[in-house]
Image 1 (cartoon, helix red, strand yellow):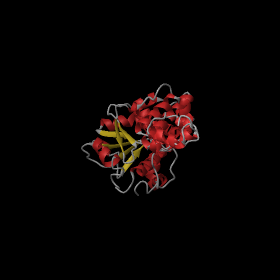
Image 2 (tube, one colour):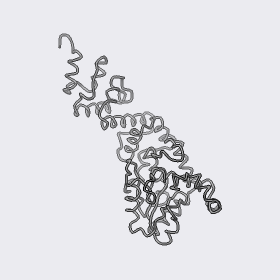
Image 3 (tube, one colour):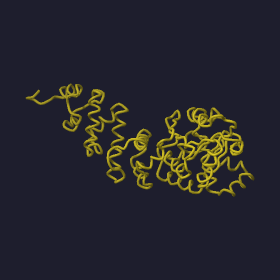
Length: 330
């Protein structure tokens, strides 16, 4: 073999034994290397090599790119996460090594959900999103639904401004709402959608400045949701007035309608988030219900506090239809 050089069979044998370096597809571009033949230790070595060689990580040659695409999902995703972070560094939107935590979780979600690198870069650039912005979620209980999306239980001493930031970062973190098969077409995850939520939050600022403290002060609990609003439950008799029938949206807060809940936090976690369905309509996907309620939040923002209440009392059906009747369980 030394005299004639390695043959295709020689290379495959050495590759399968983990003897060749992870950059072998670069050294031998005409050879065919199978990811399935690569031992687990060599797969990790390949990942570490790519992290140490960012030029190759960002723009791997075709043979190496094909090899990466055929790696086991967990290893492949790890590599794509590091690749995306390097792209952000080159755009001046990230410094230093992988910061981990919720920032890494965000990037991983975008990879797993097929969000383009251009979209991630646009969100980071347009809204100046960096690792520090996710710190508002630190210390909050993270609850995942059956699809793996993250909700965060607000601490009862959280300020309205912090709650508002946590709501926005929960939308960004999840990289999509999973809304489908509803009354409307799904809205793609994008920088424009982030801006729309920011603008809606501004218009419904009273939800955060006044109502977050009101709900917590009257014994209720609130969670951030993947579609960029709050969902609440429980509280005393005064609080019960603000959640009627299946629930009521007040600005950016959707209060479910059930009264006399002994443990509102546990109810939100187990009866809605982990079940992935409405507590009133078990066959209604929670993603659809939250889409319906977020459209009500848009109505509050568009019409204004007093005018929306007057119009809703005059013609509720018009606003329910605009929010999606089937999505709301009607």
